[in-house]
Amino acid sequence: MTERSEEVAARLGAVRRRIEVAGEEAGRDEPVGLVVVTKYFPVEDVRILADLGVTDVGENRHQEAQEKAAECADLALRWHFIGGLQSNKAAAVAGYADVVESVDRAKLVSGLQRGAEARGARVDVLLQVSLDPPGSEGRSGADADDLSALAARVGQCAGLRLEGLMAVAPLGADPDAAFERLAGIRAAFLAEHPRATELSAGMSSDLEAAIRHGATRVRVGSAVLGPRPPAL
Ligand SMILES: *Cc1c(COP(=O)(O)O)cnc(C)c1O
Image (spheres, rainbow, N blue to C red):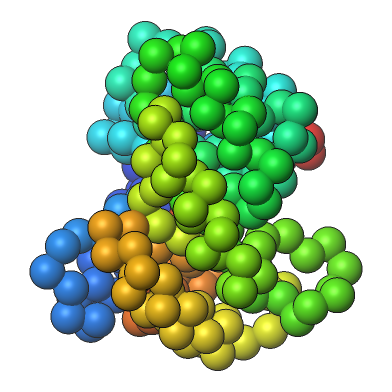
């Protein structure tokens, strides 16, 4: 093992333990999934993660994600797109992403469907719901009130499968309160879409709170890979 792979192995082990303990405390039967967020980190790190048994990686910028997915095509990884998405890039993202977690408006859906169709693959979709107060700066994610219409739109697309919801806790706010709100939004959503059971929530600093409030999958970057390098 190289020094870097030893470091990543130790950090990854600690994160897996945190997830396991939080899952136990929340009384989960099913293990909580882990997406390691590899944004800004080099493909060498992606390979180290795959060697350590990581199956799912997350990226938030289209060009970087596309390049890394291509360079790692020999690895059996699931690529999650978790970032803000321009509608003119949606088809291209569906060309390599196995899961698109940041679907927050109807305008993205036809592009994703086209990309999935061209690739001949089914792309899993999560609807990103905003937990920020309305009108706040840099807000991303759909309003809870708009989820039904968005889900219906995804449901019309044979190339897309609605897996559930995704959310990010607002910066600087109490994640516990935010994720409690998320749990309520999700309960209402599940009543209408009982098969859309995934809930992607929780990052390095707040994964325990997210799991406490129902997250089935956490997205963790810096706790596994260390401080992020400057943008590539
Ligand atoms: C970067 C990012 C993460 C991971 O954040 P860390 O604090 O490094 O764990 C999770 N989710 C989204 C949407 C991100 O952009």
